[in-house]
Length: 118
Image (tube, rainbow, N blue to C red; front, top):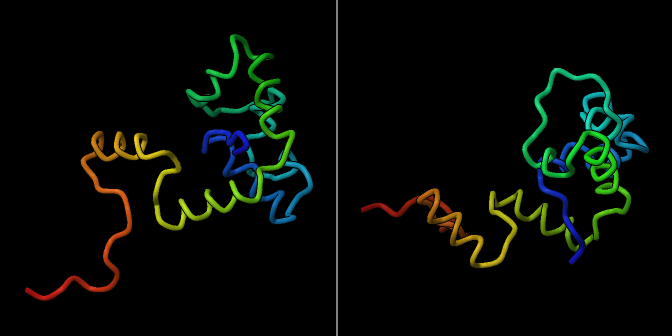
C-alpha cells in the first residue's frame, strides 16, 4: 500500500486537484498548501503533525511538498472514501481496537434501519 499522508494534510489539498477544479493545490483559493509548502503568511497555527515533519521551517516545507509529489493509488482512494462514508478509521484491527477502547465506542457496521420495537 502506498504511503497515505495523515488526514489533516490530504483532504483539503488533493480533492480540488482530483476534481479538476485546479491543476495544482496552491491554486485552490481556500487551501493552506501555500502556507505549509512555501511559507506564505497565515494566521493559522501549524498542526502538530506538520511540526513533526522537520526540525525547522525549511525542512518541514520540503517534507510537506514531498507528500504531494505522487498521486494516491486508486485502491487507497477507495479505502479513504469508504472510511469517510462509514465514519470508520483506516487501520488494522489493533488500531481500531485502540480507538474503541480510548473513546468507548464500537466500530463496525451497525444494523440498518429503525431500531426494533420492544
